[in-house]
Amino acid sequence: SFLAMAVGEGASPSAGEFVMYVNNAEKPQAHKNNRAALVLSALLLGMCAAVALIGVSGPTDAKQTELLAGVDAHDSQLAMGLLHAAPTATVAQLSQMLSSWKSQEIADMDAPSSGSRTQMLASGGFGSSLADSGKLCAKKDVIFEKLDQLVAKLARQGASLNASDAAAYKLKTEALGQWLDAESRYRLEVEKVKEAKEGAKFARQEYEKLAEAVKTTKERVATMEKQYAKESADNAAEVALIKEIMRLLGILEDQPLDDKSKAAGGYMKPKEGDSKMGDKVVLKSVQHKIAELRQKVAATSSSSKGKLTSLDELSSKLASYAETDEIKKILVDMLKELETRGDVMKRALADAKNDLKEHMDKLTKYETRLVDLSNAADKSAQKAAVADLKRAKLDGKKKTVSEDYKDEHAAYLLVSPPTERELFIILVIKKKISDFCDKKK
Image (cartoon, rainbow, N blue to C red):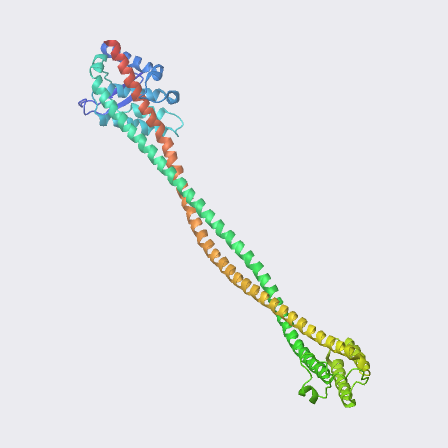
């Protein structure tokens, strides 16, 4: 059998519908038609061998090899049909032939066999009528113009397919990128929540420690102020008694013996050679003051033992005027001790108050930090919730767009190969017509 193109019976060649079919029982026709069929068959048999000679306007060598591997009898049917119909058919009719062939190609991709396709192409019940080679070459320019229009249309279809597939892929990658960005922002906010909570926990622990330190230090300062106030008052009373004794003895250096000292019973240092301490009344007054001081020291002083020893030594020295300098030294040392104690209390209280201030400053600092971190944790939690909703929405979009691309790309893979083969077949037809007609010149 051989493949042929049937022209619709009773229709003009320009308006007829061209279909291809397989005729397994066709009787021999006129010698002229047989010769034309043989010419066209020879053209088709030489197609595959001439694929590499198509030139730069056709597919690349690698693509030609791939397309050549997919050429079968049905592709030959299309080539035979186009070659036969091209001289008289319109571009629209030729395009319809391509569309019918492509539709069947796509339908047969999942079919168990190609028998149905061959039957479809063979339907129509039209007789065969082949153009002779002379007419073919005479209409070469017309045929090429029509075929070029088909090529342009197929190229546009291919570009549209590529653009549609690329657009779907772009949407897929953009959706993926948007979801990844949203996922990253969500993870960042979650991490911020974690960091803020950890920071707030640390700040709370430090705040509690400092609050306890402030409480303890306040209590310590209050105790020191109370104790130091009483001790300072007691020390002041002791200082007053010591100075009064020194006035009575006339050895107070802060002022000379004046009317006030005299009124207190003081006396000037006796003349040289006088062995008596002075008037007995003065001595008794001094002894009375020493006893009063002893009683006060014993009752209030924290270092009463040392002071009592000094007072005992002072009492023993009063018996002799010659030891007036020793008496003065004892009294001055007692004043210095009280003065030193006063300085120590002032420094200790100042240090305690400074500690309290530092603790309170730190407490305020951590209180502020605790509030800030707690607020930051709340804000980050809110942002994380918003980011979670957004990433969930974008995840749904990503899945939808991915499925859309999967369907789009599947359609692309289904339609694109037949389109490439159509282009390939047309280019081969042009090549073979050119070669055939060149040989006839």
